Structures are given as C-alpha cells and as structure tokens.
Length: 307
Ligand code: AMP
Ligand code: FES
Ligand code: ZN
Image (tube, rainbow, N blue to C red; front, side):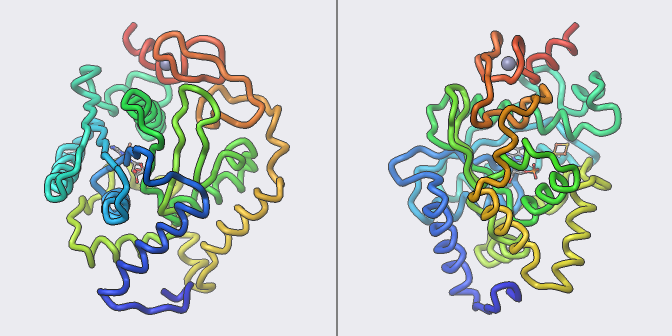
C-alpha cells in the first residue's frame, strides 16, 4: 500500500483491515455493539467484505439484498443474489431479500424505460429505488443503522463530480455517517469509506470471499467510471492523492466550509434529503420524508408508470 508506505502478509493484512474498520466506525460514531445494523449487500467484493468485517467484529449485522431484475445476458441480479445467499449461509447470517420484479411486476430497466429519467440508462432510477427501498426495509425492521460498502474510490469519484459541479447541497451531505435527523430517515454509514478499492479487493481475496466479478451491465461508460480512471492516473503519479482529497474535504467540512448550503433550494430529488435546517414533509403514500409537499420522488415515479 504505497499510500500508507506499508506492506503486510496474508495473515496480518485482514487483521489490519478489521482493526482499521473498527477505528473508523468509532472515530465517526457510526454505530455500536448494542445497535442493530442492516448491511446492504450487492454480491460485490465491497459489501460482502464489509459484512464479513462486521461479523468478525461481533456486530449484530443482518444483510439486505435488492433484486433489481437486471439480466443483461448474464443473469446479473440472479447471480448476485446467489453470492449473497452463499455468503450468509456459510456464516449463518440473516439475509433479507427484496425483489423489485416480484413486488412491482417489472424490473428496474423496464421501470426506467417507462420514465423520462431512464431514457438513456436506468442508473438514476436504480439509485433512487435502491435508496428508497433500503431506507424502508431498515425502518420497518427497526434497525439503528443502514450501512453500505462504498469504498474510498467511490467516495472520491462522487466528491470529484460534486466539486466539478459545485453541488453544495450534495457536498454537505457526503459524509462517512449521516445521522437520522428526521423521523422516517434511518442513520446511514459507510465503514469502508477510507479503504481503497484495491484494499477491499485484496481483503476479499485473502479471506476467500466469493463475489460477483461482473459490473452491472449498465455501468459501462458511466461518468463515475470515467472519474475513477482519471483519479487513478492522479494516484499513479501521486500515491495517496485520493485519500488526501477525501480527508482534506472532511476536514474542510468539519470547519464549516460547506454550511452555506443551508437554505438552498431543493432540487426536489430527495437525494440531498435531511440537510440541517431543511423543511421536510411526509410522503402520504409511503411515510418517508420528502423535500416537496406530496408524494416522494419514488412514489411519484411509481404512480406515473402505473398510469
Ligand atoms: P453501487 O451504488 O452499485 O456502487 O453500490 C454501493 C453500495 O450500495 C454497495 O456497496 C452496497 O452496499 C449497496 N448496494 C448496491 N446494490 C445493491 C443491491 N442490489 N442490494 C443491496 N445493496 C446494494
Ligand atoms: Fe443499478 Fe446498474 S443500473 S446497478
Ligand atoms: Zn413515498
């Protein structure tokens, strides 16, 4: 690990990762051993490594998998589910499965095709639906925190995009942990946010975790992949640049550099929901908070396509 000027063997590496993860969980006050955690697992290396780490640390962590109904010629959703099920059964862990096609009759690509949002790619519909469903399941299950496997590369690509567009409300919301400020919004945490993607991949390899290798068939050509490639070039030249970008951002935020977002107009997307000082309303259909009066973005979308 050039960025840390550190090299570890296959015995000490996973121990180091687990200890570091525990350090970050504590540092950012993500959750504690008395709380119930819901891990959103996609079947990929990050979220399954995260579940494995939390399991080793003795947290009460159940998993949730959302079947998005994506096939892409490789049965993407079905085989992702298999990896999650196999992981859970090997460790005797509880996995909840929510199926979009079984619940709504169609999968995310078909939902997207019926909306303006999904004219080009279903990714925005997919993101909106995942956020909504994950929050709903965590609330209904009475979980204290919902955790995702976002790694440093994911966080830095998001940060880069939000900085290029100077999207202050999203910058204010980007954090290792988002407290549940409002009823109806569960606390969210990203315990892997300071690990490079290479580090989580190495962890999965050393721990013998089997995961889906393929990316989502709609991911190719995405802006976030383009940003990740750019940032990797930067990292190549300047080891530690990605970590430094992220940590400097967190420090700037701690000093209040993004607090001007308060009072900014909402974009009505519910994505930057829960900013301090923001007025939130309750969706009359699902009961989740929303930035506009009436249905939340997800329920509005589902209502449109059922017409
Ligand atoms: P992505 O948005 O695909 O980069 O995934 C980021 C994180 O969201 C993953 O690390 C998981 O924690 C979670 N996630 C992604 N897809 C799913 C899914 N189908 N079901 C449950 N959690 C997911
Ligand atoms: Fe959602 Fe690819 S469109 S995972
Ligand atoms: Zn709703």
